[in-house]
Amino acid sequence: MTRSPRAQAKAEAKRAHLIEQATRCLAEKGYASVSLRDIARESGVSLGILHYYFASKEDLLLSVISGYKERFLQELEEDLILGPVTGWQTRLSSLLRKVMTEDRNLHRLWYDLQVQAMYVDAFRQPVREIRERLYTLISRMLEKLLSEKGQNTPPPSQEWVHLLYTALDGMFFQALLMEPEQADRMIAKLDSDLSRLLAMLFVSHKTR
Image 1 (cartoon, rainbow, N blue to C red):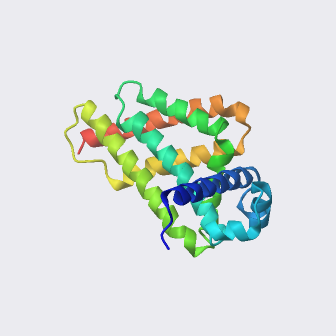
Image 2 (cartoon, rainbow, N blue to C red; image 1 turned 180 degrees about the horizontal axis):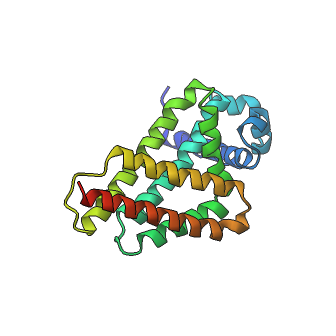
Image 3 (spheres, helix red, strand yellow; image 1 turned 30 degrees about the vertical axis):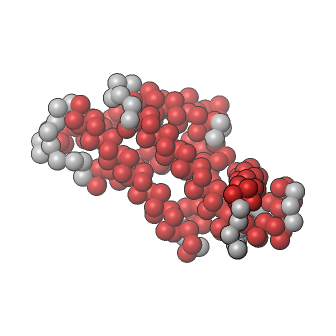
């Protein structure tokens, strides 16, 4: 039976509310320490109602992560790809500082999901898809920077794209293990390391 527009809107609002509550629970305690029963209790619904909207705990985590990462990827694209080249690194630092402080717990779920993907088959493809989108954003940004420098060379190799992703991701992971008060120091280090990596990339392209 097809739902009326009003019923559909109500169901979508309820699902969004449950995702919001689940996001808070998972971000505070981590995937392994939270059960569906915990989330149902925090959301003020029965376990049966929660199961009506989400087939499993894995399904719920994927809904939480996909929503957050979609917003994060959109912010990256707007700030870096669609914005002017001038000041791009400052805008990136500002976004990462926000993630390290205001969205710290949320972003830790991304690393939680990657760890769980080593054991849960359902998580592997979503993790690969998110990484591929991040690789694409990095590749587009590198092309933009190389074009700005007048380097009419082939697009950056996948090796460089993966190297930059690995370096940024590793530094970011380490930053999340530290206290939020140290965010400025970590951002400064990331800026410095990123500048050195990009300088190496530009030199390598000039010699191609």
